[in-house]
Figure 1 (cartoon, helix red, strand yellow):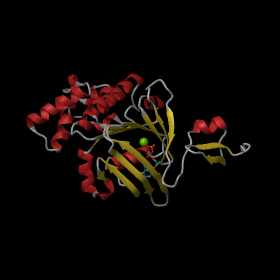
Figure 2 (cartoon, helix red, strand yellow):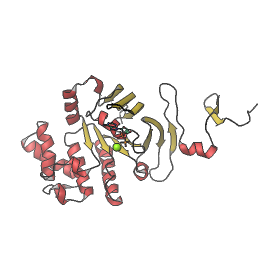
Figure 3 (cartoon, helix red, strand yellow):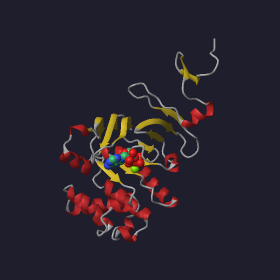
Figure 4 (cartoon, helix red, strand yellow):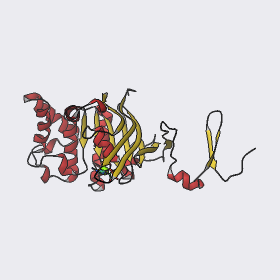
Length: 288
Ligand code: ADP
Ligand code: MG
């Protein structure tokens, strides 16, 4: 695994302004995803997940801060540059199955269409269509229209479309949100396989904790900022080790479960040791 990050966000801010309201959807978000990593971004509805993916996919521009994806500094792109970036450097899967595929084209034609737009034609294109359908395990469904297929297969077809042009990064916004458990599991397993075997960097947004449990690194987003992380060495079994993100101002969020377990709130007591920091309840006796 290379150590060059494929996604770098530094103090990313996105403010939506309408006539008299201002929403700060991202409030200084910091995130690094290394090449070949698979990360689940988890957060409540309204926490800024889709806003972040919109920026990382080149569909939207940040109000402030920096976003670099697959070595492209998104802030330096104009609208046309972002469109080109969106077509070639990232693959994208939406939650709404209907939004991922053109309904009147077969699955094969859907994949072929994005290859055509990228300038791939003829036999090369046909071969890539077959290859990418096999990659996600739906080689038998190429001739079918999306509407004739179960939601889970439609999402696999969407992954095939997203991967057709060999993007370095695959972004998925709640890709299993509209599926039943078995279909969700299959879609996630496919995304993991694509990550492991093809080395595609995957960032998957979800509010489903069972999805997060299947992914080694989970980053939580709260109020438009990344807060804490869990790294699991042993997928599906161990609860995982907790990490917190310290932003450039030195701010840190504790996992809610830690706060509740020890009643940590308002002011806490900090002390610096040789190689660690001790944090205890502010009302505890001081050790002397
Ligand atoms: P999530 O995907 O985590 O549910 P979003 O990124 O969709 O969160 O939204 C984050 C915040 O930004 C929410 O408060 C939402 O209402 C607001 N928001 C999202 N899109 C827009 C928009 N186009 N105009 C105004 N506010 C928006
Ligand atoms: Mg969303």
